[in-house]
Amino acid sequence: AGLANRAKELADAGELRLACQLIEWAAAATPEVPFVHEVRAAVYEQRRREELSLMSKGIFGTAAAESRAKAEPDG
Image 1 (cartoon, rainbow, N blue to C red):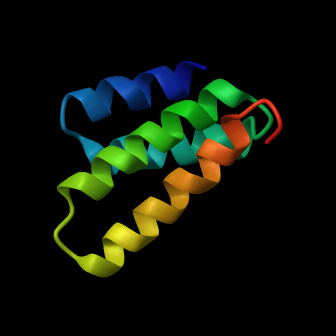
Image 2: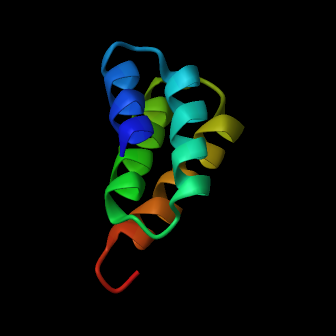
Image 3: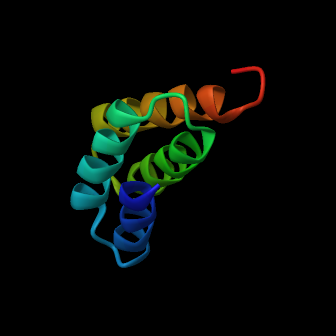
């Protein structure tokens, strides 16, 4: 959860690129942890909101949806 917490801190500070990198590492290392996917979804949702490119918005939205599904108890 250390990487996920740091990713959340970075996202809160507006450092979205680095936050995405850290949360990807956390998700790769612990794919079964719902908290990691909750943070991943939040980071990518924030990045999607701040993105101008329609294609990037789609990519970030897909990543967020993927993690939302994994963060749910039945996911």
